[in-house]
Image 1 (tube, rainbow, N blue to C red):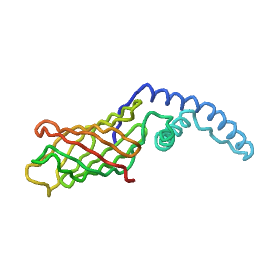
Image 2: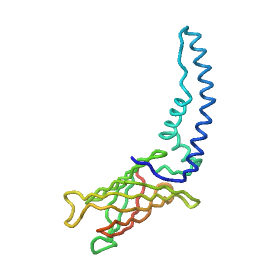
Image 3: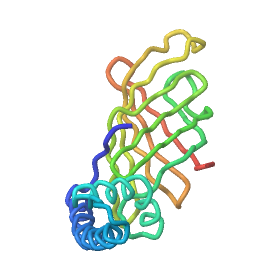
Image 4: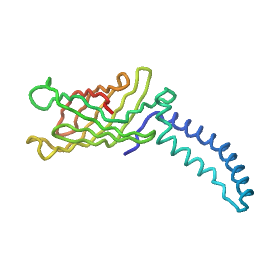
Length: 194
């Protein structure tokens, strides 16, 4: 997984909010640990504010953000899952021909990994940008593609970029283009299956 970019000021606001919430939690824990210490008759250590912040931030980054995103309180969509559909490519003679295409997206609040597979190659994301506006979300990512040993002659490792817009809740539609040396492009349409 690697970090992905989005509106940084919003992230800092959420981090600040988590930090603010940690002060009363720390105060409550201090009182509770003090009471337990007196009842048990042994000295107990109170976790520091930084420890409370780390635990709260870890919980938010891995779990809580998904629920908030689903109910619309975050501007980041949860794209986790396996997406299956088709790919049309300028490679070859017939752009109208559709090829099976699968995306595996693993996402946290600050990190993402996009893996794509066709019958002849496999790609992994190297960077990503997730942008949200009134019309929905758009995932733009760069990738490194490696052909499978069984792929047709002429297929070579390459880099490229894909731009996918979230349509409805479980459909991504977009385009891709490859980097120097291949200079090809195509269309992608996938639906989340898990």
